[in-house]
Amino acid sequence: MTKLLSKMLLMLLLALPFVFTSCDKDDDGPTELLPKLEGVYVYGTNTVATGATDPNARMAVARLVPDQGAKVDNMPGVYGKLMHIGANSTIKIVQIVAEVPTRFGLPNGGEKKLGTEVGSANDQVVAGTLVKDGADIKIADEGLYYVYIDINTLNFIAMPVKANMIGDATPGDWDATKATQLPVVSSSKDSTVFEGTMDLKGAAGYRYRFNDGWEPFKDGNIVVMGSLGVPDYGVAWDTGINDLGLHLSNIPNKIGGPTKVRLTYIAKTASWKELKISSMDNVQLNLFGNAFLINGVQSNWDAPYELKKPTASGTKYTWTWDNVDLIEGQQFVINQDGGWAGVIVAFTGNNNTGNAFTDSKIVNAIDEGNPDANYFVKVGGKYKIELTIDGVGGARTVNITAK
Image (cartoon, rainbow, N blue to C red):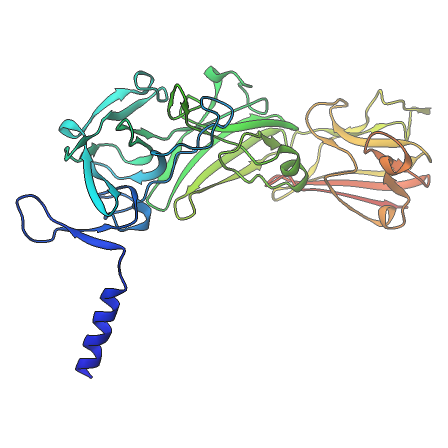
């Protein structure tokens, strides 16, 4: 049994070609396991990776802005990665080429500089030119950092990540000086959470940015992507799913009003998620179109029908219009404050329920040869119309039943 165990142990050791030992210059004994896989590795005390062989230590290539600078997605030797770094930490850098390690550090462990002086965001960063066998890099403050390394020029920047929102959905619109800050509420090796409350505009777009700039680093051909969007605005709007990432399309916001925004970075998957909780207590909606009478006169897309506030149940808000006498062959939508800003509900993009739809009494106006996807009344009569909007995610349900 002992010989069998010894053979099994030997086979296991032979099956681990991904590491080798490294010795200090003044020490003949092994001091550290290093990976064989070529690349650049960042690790250290109280960080996401305590050793170079930890999978979290390997740097990813930096995602570049594809329509700026050299107009490429990435460049050889240019790395960028988000990582949590604890207070009073020291981090090490090693490059592996053809299984040969080269260690890098910064003179005196680095120093703080203003990011705008080194091509980075408008904040204090730890930056410098890497030197072989230089001192381990010192990071004093705990938090989520974007670590940038250009191994070609040996440029190093560690930038603390501070999130904000910008866009026509936000109070400051696209004015970069008025971006809405999202303070950090927690940060650990597993995740970092940013959170803030603001008044958002509905049917509008926005982006999340790191710090007060669009790029963690920008210099000539190298322009690093530093804002979050979605792969496609239209798809995100129709599905109600904001798949956040380093994308160029803006993020849609359906619901206007006071909103708590929580943005979370998840280290295990290197991904971002958002949670928006909107309060719609004071949002007034109405029917709008030419499918009903207002004071005995048929409306002509010029006045709201029964402007009202919702009833609330948890995070769900419901507006109800009962005994609405709809006119055959005419159209309507639901919108906010009798206008075309804020919440606008047409036939598409909602969960349409009720016998008015199953019996094809109310259909998509496009299917009747009209250019816009309004609600089209195929069978006139009295109806009950209910709209429910979930304050978390913005899902909409329109329920219309014939009386």
